Length: 360
Image (tube, rainbow, N blue to C red; front, side):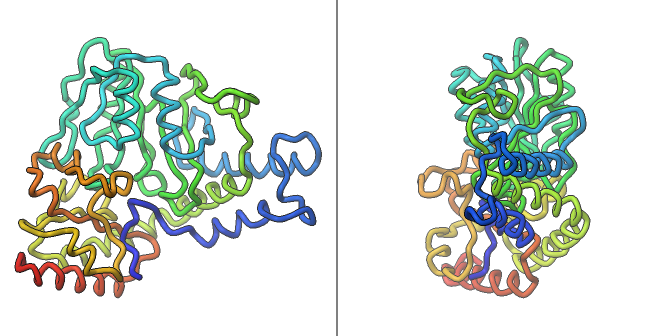
């Protein structure tokens, strides 16, 4: 199986797995200890959690704290609901974790449009009285990189908070500048599933969603998993170390893929994007048939979170595509562990399936 679905999840880095193993051990190694316990075993587990917190924080701006969560969805809920702001503005291409949470808080939420390139204009109209603006760093479906620094400055100037879903950008791009909240997820940067984090700018008030033991500075009660924290931290540290190598590798794969998929139309900006994400379409393509015929290749027809819904992509609709064209798009994602030969084999299979439909 050739794996080309890096936006859904990334492979677990071997280094992250190794960092997790000691904290999954039985009584003989005491790796099972509760990090909130006061005894020696508990203190050792707590120390591992704090090392991981520092490693994750190294991906984020100074002047804030990292709160561990179960994933980015919880982190986003904590930021948007816990901020206490009741008038929200979010981009039209946000992940459902932002869109649905924003609508829960503010049924009249202002939706900020994007242009045909999949970008929010830095000068987009934001309604007066908005208390929180949320715009993602990198879109999970089409890979476009948003002008978050300019938008964060706009929010600050009008007295609003700025929240950024940095799930697809963390560990790959520089951290969003000017945000008050930044959400990220370990399994999108070669770490384990089941853990994420919310970065909170110093001085920003936030109310807890989950109550109980008062862990994570009172913001997120519940026993932390040292194993998951250690894996997240190791993955983050690896991203810090391999930042440039990963970028160059993805850039090389991007140029190769553009040649291999000549004749396909790219969805989203060619330049303002993370190049590990290639969203393509062919008029008249039956994507379900292509997916069925290319069973040796793992790729996607859109967001994994909306898989099986049957609904056209709200992201592709937002950039002006018809429902028909939206349903003719595929998403190919690659990264650190993708080989040139794998990309070539996958492209050959996908193109052959498209040719069999007579659309190439």
